[in-house]
Image (cartoon, rainbow, N blue to C red; front, top):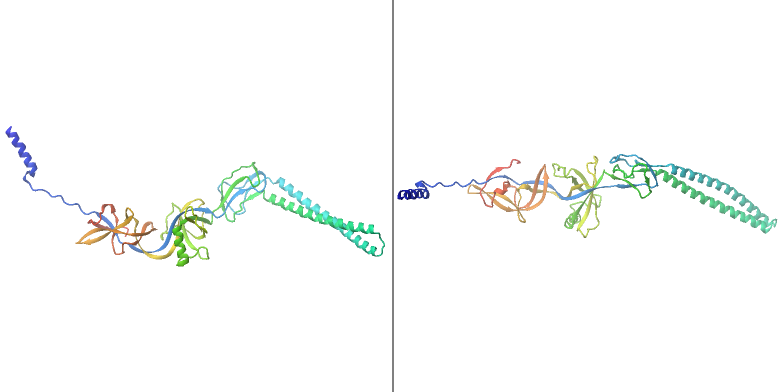
Length: 404
């Protein structure tokens, strides 16, 4: 038993003392490897970015101006139609008959007027003769009065005939108008796309009531977006006080660019569809605190369509040289934005926490760049990849970014 206890004590002592051997030290971990870049100074346009929507410059809700049965549909649903192109045909036979009747009435009233003018000329001649005979007392007062009355009646009849001619001619113009409008056309001044038809052949169309289809213009096209009150005040300061921007309500134009969600920016960081601001709402909407802005842009291939959601860029000042860094280099700590700047001390590299003041994000050549207004200089190196492995003041190893 004593032998067993001795073995246990010996084993315990060996474990506690490491069996008499020297202790091994654990090597400290290597500093994390991070990718670094130097901030780049670029000359950039000052652009404001907004979300907006597209709308047609012209839109026609097609309704008939005459009542009748739908005889023919002249377009395919969703087709492009030209200005003045016929969209529908209404049965025109009743209106052709009405026009023929109106023309006949005009002809009759013209004939009646001619006859009455002859009678007026005769009555006028007889009255002149009666006036001469009255001076020589060759006719009685009664005969003179009859000649005078006949002259008055003939004058009234001619005036009535002229009024009848005017009325019949008006009826003829109305009949011509109705017949013409049996062909329902696109009233847009530019090409447009037509919606599907709401009625098919044989249906009764009621003038001014029956909705048939909608035609919307495509080229050019309007872009609408809203700006808040602070942005509106900033633009007004630059337009009226600094004179650094043109007044869109004058002859000069304020440039803008539009892009869809599936489109990419150009090498200059701008959206692909260029236009200019052509309207600013005269007042702020008090409920939302915004002002509506409108731009107009060409759309020759109909790539843009009314109702699309868009991103809009608008010139907001003169171009200037700004410091830019990759957007992924920016860290966030509550409300504070920061970068890690590489500093050297005693031959080692450390990550220094540096608060920064930011400007807008710009996209150039497919890379999102953050404008830094204050906090770093172009001579310093900043961490652009590996931020999660870095702690303020910690030692790091660096590698240059492959994008440089």
